[in-house]
Image (cartoon, rainbow, N blue to C red; front, side):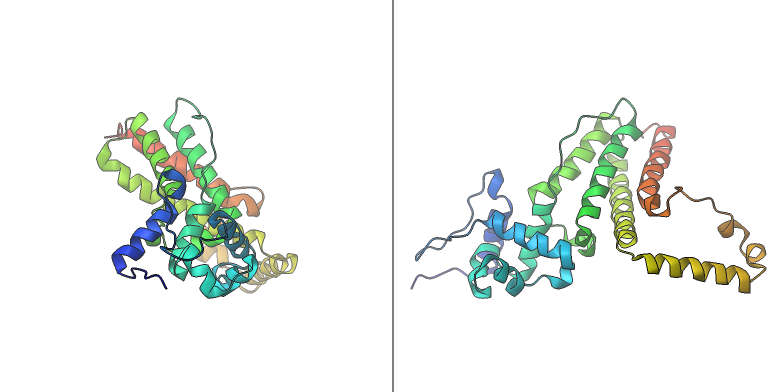
Length: 250
């Protein structure tokens, strides 16, 4: 039997090798015995499809292993622990599409970035279930951050401001996409029940508008409430960029 180094350092290195396997890092392989027979990309395709269908709650090494035809123990050499599997899934699902710079305005470029990241999170709602503090550290997620920072640099946003802008944009996109995914998952009956509760509230609390004049008169962000999260991202980007430009990017 071959021996395997199980130290934390070797485990971390193996995981980083898997994450960066398409960017020059050699993925780990057993020192002795048969070489892996599955492609890691195929394993992650199956895991992402499972998460898209059932959320992270439906993802386990056993469930993923069943989809690719191996045992749970047999999956470990490919993905490592459950936490490492989720990180690999995050990065695998986060491929950044190619697009040209939107135009000369800061808001155009930031909006193009934000709406593409929003669409990615709507396509894979489980991404927002993973705390932002647990970013995968992989190349695909790094591509998104690098692209945003390049936009801010090109438009003259000073380095001390960039971290705050990044935090605000990621938080807005992730939360809005989570809401959009929830809206899309609502059955017709759920939407009708929400409207009925709103009507009942107006009927049973006749002075509602006098009690809450600002919130009850707030105009909708979009004509179709299901599109409100995406439109909210777009308008938030515009507001943020106007503030940055008013400050001269300093």
